[in-house]
Image 1 (cartoon, one colour):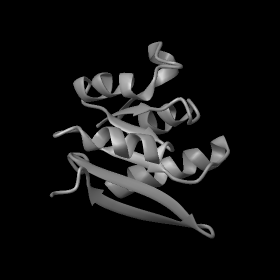
Image 2 (cartoon, rainbow, N blue to C red):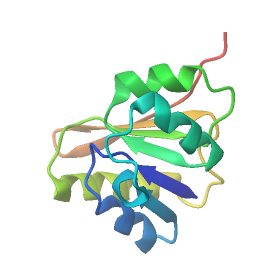
Image 3 (cartoon, helix red, strand yellow):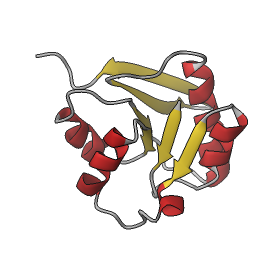
Image 4 (tube, one colour):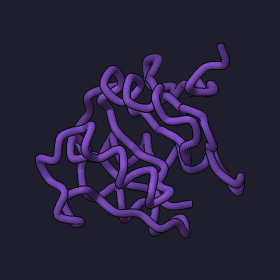
Length: 126
């Protein structure tokens, strides 16, 4: 799987993905820092990236207009880098060897210290 990490998350998440055998880039590494969210979408879709963010509201809205996408991962809690890495590692474990998250969103939250996943089709069938 190919991941693109949003600038609102720590760049070290790319190394977590690399360690699990995935390709990953942080927007800062691609010269896309400060790019408007709506301007990132073409790059995400064309690159067949699973996008990782904690900007749920904006990217749910933007992904609603995408008929086909590689997937969206939303790390819900605002967290320090170490916690972000742990949550993203849990995401990679949850996805496992699957072919991806085609047209799906995987949201990750915490209930105390327990990681909770919510996975759903997006955009939702109408």
